Length: 408
Image 1 (cartoon, rainbow, N blue to C red):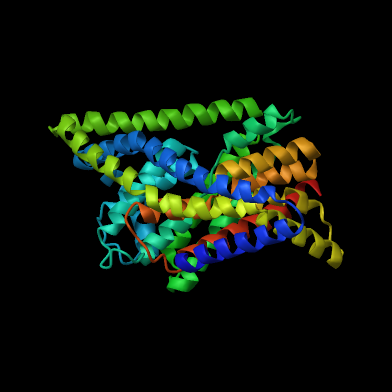
Image 2: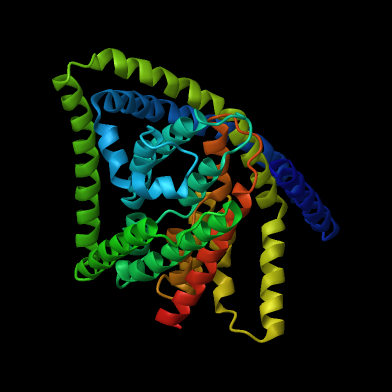
């Protein structure tokens, strides 16, 4: 699948460059060449930037596993995850790292979520009989990451506040509804492809419990101001993270674990994993960079706008679509598109709000796929990309629908 996708990206970029040259835009040649070398530099920068944080969390996770703290986390969601990932045996350490990753994602703890996700992928890889082909469990885990619910998207609030929004947090509920829809679509598509039954007492009980907690949290957060939500999110996230780290070290010390030795041993694997990511990141960033520099995404937007107008539908949402189309490829690119839309249309305009909802409710699918599968050397992603993009499409449609519902 990735071989075909990579070829299609390059073919699309080549056709877009030809069209640009035909229209007299010769600067596209320089832009494309710059994108190629910039991608190489960016891949190295990202991987080297991950060295420290990966080494830190791999070391801490090894200490936490020896202390038995990770096993406690595993028991919280093992009954649910074992139904969704039947090939992972009960009691396996992957349940703990998966639970911690999804929790970090929900709390918006990006610095912890990615290393914990890579650790979870590594744990799942230990069960993989064919090390170059993704297992069902790894695909499900990746899709949950690409559509993961972020309870409080503080960064989106921050950008809206910087742009002068009257109420920076008024997109909170629309973002939450859209990202929940994205997760449900992603999970449902994977369940259909992998023939996982979601209609059983365990899944329904966990779903009802999580939904109840989510609703209660939403009602509480809606009573707070944007500043209070940001403060609560920061305190809660940092507090949980610090408590987790301290519990690893203190419990391990109490149980006579060789803390320093275990930490160093785990950190070594983080370093090698970060370096191994470079070729996978480079391949994906190179294709994405050419798509952007060639103008292919701009042509796609023009085509979408023409189609919507031809059908006679309300086309206000098209002005925010650059953020939606860019997000699966690049988080920083989508952020730039969002800020550009806010500046051009107004932060509290329909397009400005919709771009913020897109930014907060969808994920960088291609980046996540390259990083997570690249970290364990998987070449054949099977249906992971299709399911991940289905979750993105579900999130985009939900975001547009919710935006019309709230602000239409």
